[in-house]
Length: 424
Ligand code: MTE
Image 1: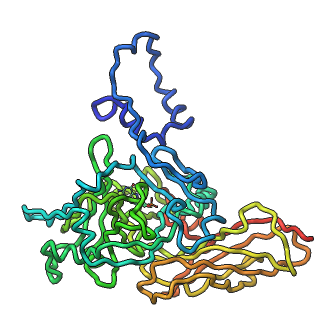
Image 2 (image 1 turned 90 degrees about the vertical axis):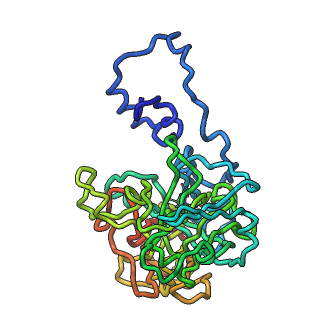
Image 3 (image 1 turned 90 degrees about the horizontal axis):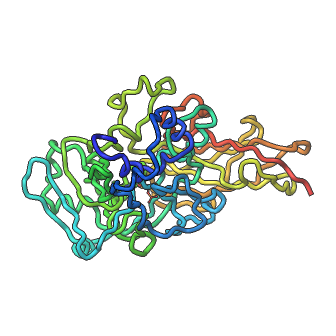
């Protein structure tokens, strides 16, 4: 039993725990075995909550199957400035809800007021719309680099829990004003978002953002119904998802069912007890989630996507070709990417292959970069490091050791990979 009732629904929902490590823990609690035949009368609901998940592209490499979480191989990720929908990383905490667009309604509630307002999908689509190019990144992107230093709790994401799309929808500001929010009113501090996806206790996914971001005309927060020119695919929030540019993926709530204008942050697990940073010295015995703010704008990051860690790279005219991405939260633009193959003695500035033209602090998309970098004649292998600098001149920390945290979030230290060198 769990929480006073059958454990099966939890077990089926959080399939992520069905691992040999967890079975080993259970084994130590075994009190006996049920006799064959004694379970026949049990009628517990063992139906799979993931039975109606959407079809996924074979190129997505799963970090977990149930719930579905997956990313691309990094070299495929940087083939496109705009990530094709079917190749966009997926980060789901729960089963993908099935939503009928004909009966879909978005509810807007203002704390303390009894009346709520609702919008159908058609009503939302009739309002003035905006299209913006926005990169979304999971707070756990590049967690696998942190794990190399010390274990953390979380999905073992590589460097591809990130993607860029053009999103079309209604400015959230317009909806809030229509719902009767007075922008000079100081009482309300947060906009809470509730997803339609729910756990077995009927608790929905939820998150919140500060109200200034939602009301600021230049904040560009939209309730999106299109991703790259087509209705948002089920995995990415069909029919409505909030896009909060420059802010961690967790606040970009998919399958949006309800918005609450409030004095308080969302009380959801994902706002209060997850997606927060801590000192490297804090462990699971000492952690106090009330002491750290919820992550909103993400710090600057870069990643080397090609060549791959451990591969053999051809040296041409004394140089190797290196490619990757860089991005910064809060609408900052990448102004430089530095790359070294000699432990930082010499830094080479990478070329930008693709960068959006929008000025900071409304620069929401990543930058793709590449460089032909010289390697010494006698080297048989090199370690490549990258670091990006954003338009606030913030740059990446040098070592993962000093930013390690127990959840493995905000893993934005210099990216380092080792490759062998092949000479013709
Ligand atoms: N919204 C809902 N309703 N449920 C979720 O599980 N996951 C969040 C966010 N919005 C999530 C959600 C997280 S942690 C991330 S990183 C992004 O969605 C991932 O978006 P994507 O799957 O479209 O890439």
